[in-house]
Structures are given as structure tokens and as C-alpha cells.
Length: 500
Image (cartoon, rainbow, N blue to C red; front, side, top):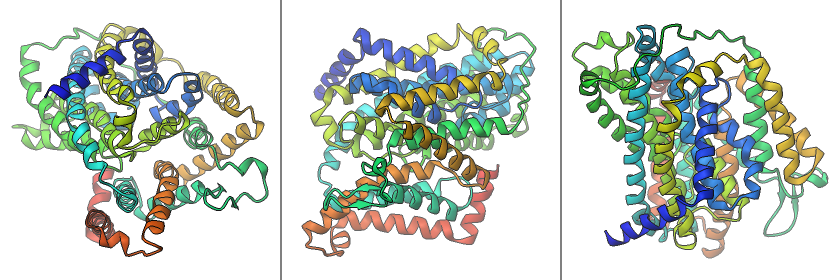
């Protein structure tokens, strides 16, 4: 307990410096703005803002990027309630009852309970991360190269199972990502691989270039593809603070949603996205009158919003303790850490305690800031919602090009984000989800390194992955999951869940 308190004190000491407070506020503000504006998600924004973090110290950079991520969860709920357009994938469920409440003149109550539920869930999730951080890091320190390789294989299998659409398409995307990660110079032999004699590929494909193209540019193209119809609520926002009856109906869904989101957020393979859906389903099943759901039930906003924020924050656990990104946003965080020369994994806590505990403390500070940013500024967000997308995209495009050119001053990087943007757009068109590809790209290099180390230690014997109990267990879980996901009955049920 003493260690826990001293670590939190260290964390708040780092998080409460004027610079880090400013960066947390900037991240939360930008995240909320991104969540509010439909069509620009946190993945695209973090990809676009990676070049800006080059001039910051690693702790400040990660505090800002984390703020953007959970800020977007808050902002997405504002759009879902007021316009019936989820600004973020996890806000889809909030739109079902939140928008109906807004049409009944209770938009303020819906926004208020979403903010309060999110703050409570964020606070609990921060404590969970702080409590699990040290034990998981100690456990991770017994991992050797074989265990790490098996853990990454399991993480990629989770990403396949939890990805939307076809399982075979998700597997294909992961394999493409792993293949792209091998482009460049072989670390062991110094040989060039898949560079086709092109000098700018000798150092491999830049992470920021791939992320910005596949998510930033492709997102712009996708949004230009369809015309928007924004059903902005005409009624007054009304009071923001829920009354006693509202709290009575909401407190249990908030507690259940926080628990569900926190547990699912830890799962590798984007488990955080499933939190709001699972919470909504549970609340509907437990309700005395399930017919109220979809017609403005406050429980349908309180539970999913709490699950949403809890999952967004506990998804940092596998990243900070094991160095495994559970979703595309965390893959971008790994990219940001490696750009700053920090190796993600259990050593982060021992080698960079300021960064580890500072980030955890900044999450609570960020949640408090989000309450201040969101509730008093509702009027401004409503006005922003009326800005048409065709006026925003030229500025976003220009920002992408300037940002990517500023990293290496290479015109080829600007051309590459255009190429990857077109590829990302075509992937979306043909029903391929690009997020698993980014996970494959980030984990590909780490997998190759650990595979080679394990084989060097075992003198080339593949049996080392089965002989070591932890490694064998992780591979067995991965295999069972993949076989189950490919079974026709399970696959049919999975497709139905994603369709709903």
C-alpha cells in the first residue's frame, strides 16, 4: 500500500507540472473537438498529430495523445445525443436512447449523465490501472522471447476475432501489416528486403506515414464519398444536472457499465469497443420494461457511456505493462513511444517511472478537465456541429501534408500518404477493416525480433515455444480462439452481434 501511494504521489508530481497540465488540457480539448465533429476519429487525429509530438518530451507527448483518445470518447457522445451521428465507433449505442431523450427536450440530462458516468468510470479505471500496473509488470518480467512471441500471436488472434466483418479478411489484413513491417534493412544481416532498389525504402516504411495515410487521408476520402444529413436537435438543451429520479435510475447501470468496460478494455484485439454494446444488452435484459429502450431510457445512456470510458482507459494496461497494443489507437501509442526511443513493455515502469505513473495520474486529471470542457461549452459544440464537412477537409488535408513533410523533409513521404490513403479507401470500399493491418505492422517487427531471439537461444529449435509452459498456454488459447471463430455456428452468431 505504501508503494502504491508513493507511486501515485510521483505520478501526480509529474502530471501537475504546468507543461503537462497544459498538454493534458490541449489533448482533452482537441479530443473533444474531434469526437464532436463527425468524420474525424481519434485514430486519424492521433496519426495526424504524431509529427507535433517530436518536439515534446516523451511523457508530455503521451499525456497529450492519451487526452485526445479519451477526450474523443466524451465528444462522440455529444454528437450521438444532439445529432444522432456517433462521432466515434463506441458512441453508436449512446445514439439509440440519447438522441430520443434530446428530442423529448432532455438533451441536457442525457449529456449530464453521460459526463458524470464517464468521469466516475474514468476514475475507477485509473485506480484499476494503478493497482494492476505493478503486479502485471512483475509478471511480465518473467517473460522471455518465446513468451513474448506467443503473447503477440494471441493478441493478433484476438484482433481477428473482435474485428468487424469477415474473419478471413481480418487475417489477410494482419498478414499484410506483418509483411509491410519487414520492408527495409534486415537488422541481423544488413541485407535489404523488399525495397525494389528504392533508396527511400531502405529504412523501412515510416510508421507515421502508414498511419496517416491509412487512417487520415482514407478517412477524408470516405467522408467525401457520402453526403451528410445532420439531424441537429431543435429543442432547447435544458438543465444539465440530472435530478434525484435520474440518479436513482442511473447509478446501477453506471456501476455495471464501469465493471464491464474495465474488464473488456484489458482484452487485446479492441475489446474496449465491445464494452458499450455489452452494457446496453445487459441493461435491456435487466430492465423491468425493455420496450423503453430505444425510446429515451436514461439507463441506455448511463451504462454504455461508463463502459465506453472505462474500456478506453483500461486498454492502456496491456500497452504499459506488456508492450502489446490492444487496438489501433494503442498501436499509434506504441509508434509514438518508439519514435521517442522508449521500448514499450515491462521495463517502462522500472526505467521510466516518471512516464508510467505520470501518465496514469494524468488520466484522472484529464477526466476532471473533460467535465469542465464538456458541460459549460455545450453551446459552442452545438454551433460547431453545423459546420459542413466540405469546408473542413481542405484544412485537414493541408495539415496532414505539412505534418508529414516536417518529420523527414521528404517529398516521397507526402506522396506515400496519398498512396496509402487511396489504398485505405479501397480497403474500406471492399469491406476490409484497416485497423488489424496497423496492429500487424506494429507487432510484426516485435514478433520477428522475439522469434529470432527465441530461436537463437534454443539453437534453432521450434520446440522452445511448446516446451515453455507459459508460451505453450498462450499459443493454445490463440489456437482455440481461432478454431472457435472459424466454426460456422460461432461465426454466424458473431456476425449477428456485429450487425445488431
